[in-house]
Picture 1 (cartoon, rainbow, N blue to C red):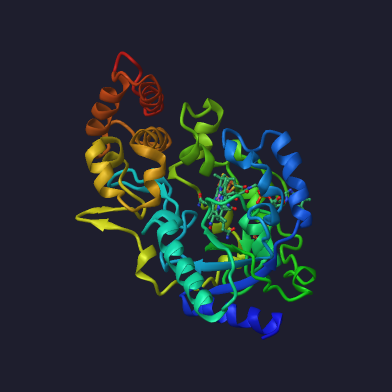
Picture 2: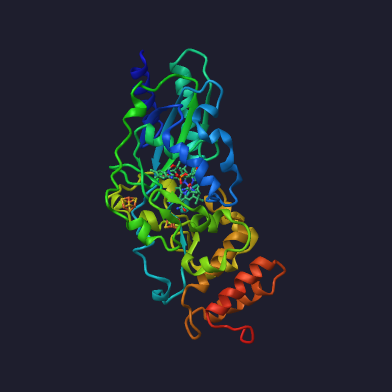
Length: 370
Ligand code: B12
Ligand code: SF4
Ligand code: SF4
């Protein structure tokens, strides 16, 4: 088999493992990676120290002798509405509800993709007799996966910084296999998918925190995904109101993207919202989230991406969402929510207490009322 045939066979193996898209990029220093240094120097990575790992500058540095990167994408879209299509909190009379990002409604994607990537590696070992190294990563490796995906022909790097595929949109998880196998056809890096953003700027205009500081450039310190998932301490005061009702991640710059309007829904059950009795992760009840015990949190979010925020982070975020909910005295659940916020405001955890007090102030409960 020549390189092109091996590449074609590898892509077949990727799809047989259950991926929607599979392509191969050479393990090379792609031009976009030149932006990384400046992005880090500007401080856009916030407290995510691992993004400074020098190996991220080229997939060739991720493994000695690396020749190719097999990039796979899995659709996680479901047929449910978007955050921008569901009613704003003030129009939800029954109980204020928050928003968990689409990618975190179901099973932990690292596990789902990780298993499929390992199946690909096993099949490659069966079919390609020569000794080779292969390491599978979902997020965790020193690889900028979207850039590798672009050069594997999976889509373009869009103004919202997501990878968009012309047919599938951007509700895609990425996983990569860095390998010493030489699989990439010689012209692979020269024919990436064209940028189809055109004159559109809907994502930039819709981002509530101004995190897309220029087209294709995201300041993570302002991104709601960073603030609600990665940041451990206090959320900066000026960003609390723009966070709205997002309690874990944010979908807005993808919800408004025209390329997602006809995005197909996945047939996999893994990414449907978890439902436990009346508790659902689709637009979850905020009173539940501020009242959840650490034990219940562990049970509800076992094998779920949400556990990355930890119990404390989720309660902190839910306090902010309630503060933004427009909840008023006399409305259903007001008293119960006020009482629970007052309890958190009196707890020993200074960060949680301060966020709960902020929420109390926002729903019109000054210290003397609470
Ligand atoms: C750190 C990280 C984050 C951070 C930072 C995001 C970011 N834009 O970098 C935070 C926590 C904010 C985040 C948020 C999200 N993430 Co994230 N994240 C990552 C992670 C672990 C590393 C990304 C990275 O290296 N960033 C470094 C910066 C520099 O890259 P960049 O912003 O993409 O910039 C590139 C280009 O835009 C370009 N560029 C930069 N400047 C310029 C200037 C010009 C002029 C040009 C032309 C180009 C250009 O070069 C850069 C590359 O060097 C990857 C997994 C991985 N290992 O790659 C997942 C990953 C990117 N995340 C993912 C997802 C799903 C999300 C969220 C949708 C989750 C959510 N719903 O909340 C949001 C989306 C926010 C957004 N608009 O990007 C998916 C993306 C899938 C896709 N279709 O794109 C990934 C690939 C995880 C996965 N395995 O599936 N994430
Ligand atoms: S995920 Fe939300 S906060 Fe982050 S860039 Fe997109 S719209 Fe802005
Ligand atoms: S909303 Fe428009 S500019 Fe933003 S990623 Fe989609 S097509 Fe590109």
